[in-house]
Length: 201
Ligand SMILES: *Cc1c(COP(=O)(O)O)cnc(C)c1O
Image 1 (cartoon, protein in one colour):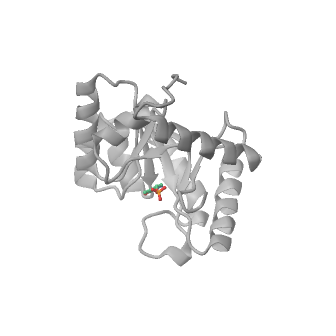
Image 2 (tube, rainbow, N blue to C red; image 1 turned 120 degrees about the horizontal axis):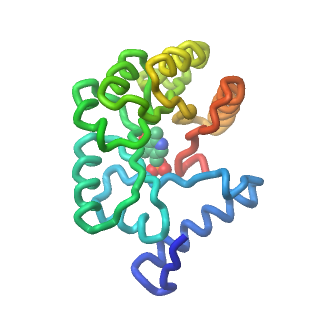
């Protein structure tokens, strides 16, 4: 990780990142295995630049237009090497435009989405978004249907590296959901589990 100045403009974010990493460690998480994803939706390119300055090169975006604009802005600033994760609902008519820009599609929940991604970017890295029943309306694949979808996506030549879930509320339901995600990922031998937002921490 790049050294940041104690009093520079990135000092605030650097300090908060340090706190987050300390909390992860106190909770028994291996800091090398638990990655912090900087979700910058709704913020401008300066937020991505600030994350980059403290060594957070994995960035999550929910909206196609924001991702396109911020990616261009970062390239302009010469801040390269960001890995862009797409977290939002996938609009099939945006897949072609995003395919060359997204490094990991975290919110694949349907075979048709996977098929389109595979055609636009063969071998793309994807996660399957797992849906929870108490969370109607959110995109996602029911837990029982995840193994079959994973097989189909692998059959399309996609690199299925894990699962993603947005936790339902309240917290005890979130815990149960995270356990389900972990068990499913273990069963399928998938290393990545993209779970937990600010509130869950
Ligand atoms: C928005 C979002 C996040 C980040 O949420 P915060 O509350 O800002 O931490 C994480 N994961 C997904 C899938 C999201 O859509």
